[in-house]
Length: 119
Image (cartoon, helix red, strand yellow):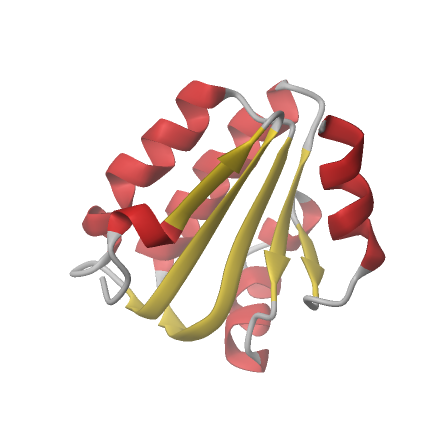
């Protein structure tokens, strides 16, 4: 993981944001698992996953996101995947995960509106 855990995870009242970096695959996904578990334990209603610097994602990364989506939906919330590359978007769509998360760019007004809602 290129970012230190303290830089990768940011939380606020009712929301959490995770920044992933590099190739999220069977080798690197376990590094994010403790952060994902921490996010699930906090039970946020809004989760933002920044994917701007993710160059590749396999089923291991998709599994992390699916886990977040499942726990967030239990709280009546939403997971936003921000600034995903076309390759990552295609992977998310191909496996049907786009039915459970919202793909947006960083300028999407729903991100700031939702954070304000939970503040």
